[in-house]
Image 1: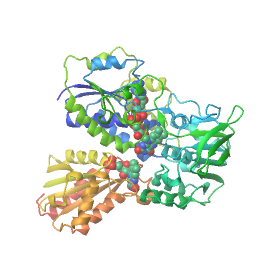
Image 2: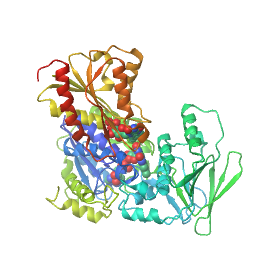
Image 3: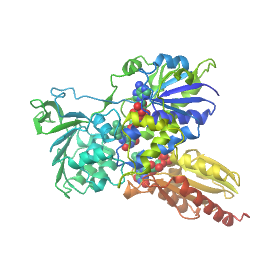
Image 4: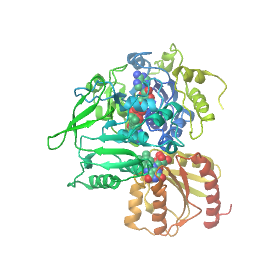
Length: 413
Length: 155
Ligand SMILES: Cc1cc2nc3c(=O)[nH]c(=O)nc-3n(C[C@H](O)[C@H](O)[C@H](O)COP(=O)(O)OP(=O)(O)OC[C@H]3O[C@@H](n4cnc5c(N)ncnc54)[C@H](O)[C@@H]3O)c2cc1C
Ligand SMILES: Cc1cc2nc3c(=O)[nH]c(=O)nc-3n(C[C@H](O)[C@H](O)[C@H](O)COP(=O)(O)O)c2cc1C
């Protein structure tokens, strides 16, 4: 089968889709475009620096470009450098796999005070994303709002000692930032009851290994729940009272955020508990980890989703599809995108009606400074050649520098 | 020799490795490659050698694509005493308490049904420096040599 397919976004959902398409139909031309000069989306810029095993999925994704024949076209921001309409004219099929990178706001009074940071921005900064804001000063008592795995990643990284970061790819800037944070109380608050928190019990287990912390669980009461809830409660209570170091990790549950207060900088967070009583927690900063939404940037995501022909199958309209977080919202781990991608690939191949007259990637010819997969391999080699002691990679964080290295011909090792 | 590579995977690493092993050995042998999700224990034949490649998920569990096969072994307890296999595991030492428990469980289920395991169970570590194929190719060569003897096939 032939046909020209353009996937917007080289994160897990875009990569798994390219893989599934080319596996069924090796004759397709599959181009994967990303706004960044480098591929892999949140595998590089979301997954925690101390979870290198999870990031290793990139080795599998590399094969899609090295052996299956997909093309990576980096440093092209759709909506800015080329429009979606232009791409739709040039390709038989366009798939939006652009993720969701905006932090959902609390939507309560005080959530724009200084000292309030979104988990997405913070994890991008920790992962040295080229567009991330500088790492903020958190002060001695940060408060994390949210009870999912992203909240746990942040909690764990903030609690780790330098020795516990060995083998990661945490950069010198973020490493120094972590070392200089003088956190004594780190509180994590969830709206749901503990048995309904969205924590993965395997990730909770990792907290049991931290050397520098004392853990305190609050608001846990025995309650009727299902087997998963039971397992979660057991993991949580198992951590309660762990006492190995001076840094206090305090878990609170069942608290609905009411307001953040402070003069200009946040000083306290106010909640309502299950008994409708107000609970006040003083803090030096707030990190919100309550999910992601479309950033008001280059793609009209919400409008496209609202007018979708059949969102559950990924069909947005004629020859236009959505995948990954862009389609399903900010839920789902990397493995789930593989299953989704296999289903979507079948849908796309069943609908495909190629028109040999379409220009395909020739339509991208005018765009300057595009990077390709060989360029990424040059960046990867530069980053892994001589990492600092205790690190497996030293990321290049400047977009300009990435593009320069990507475009140096003949230096690939 | 007739070889079937059976993979159990969640995110595709085991599948990719299985295909690499197939590509490496198909010139010299009759090799096919199949997902455990599409395999029933009753399909296993005495005149073939089975290379199992399996990862680990959840809390030391079998990956999704190997679960039905694992369940079938547990439930039906088929007689596999004529079946020869070797197993290569994928895991991640970040999960230290359950490192490579998936393939370990699969090997135990196979041998409990009488299947004959050849060679050591190798454990790849996603957090380690080795590429899976660098460990798997020497392992596959070695166990294929063992199988030729065990199945009485001249080299
Ligand atoms: C902090 C964090 C940690 C996580 N940790 C884990 C984990 O440990 N394990 C796990 O299984 N899951 C984890 N997840 C979830 C996982 O990252 C997501 O399920 C997955 O990355 C979503 O894939 P995606 O391809 O839809 O989106 P993304 O990975 O976000 O990829 C989208 C890509 O599209 C590109 N893009 C966006 N807009 C444009 C545009 N206009 N033009 C061109 N390109 C564009 C982006 O640059 C990006 O590369 C984590 C998520 C976060 C936020
Ligand atoms: C959610 C999750 C849970 C995991 N659990 C384990 C585990 O308990 N033990 C282990 O050794 N590896 C574990 N792993 C690591 C995987 O086995 C490893 O990444 C492997 O390469 C995946 O291969 P696959 O893509 O074929 O499934 C886990 C990975 C994830 C994402």
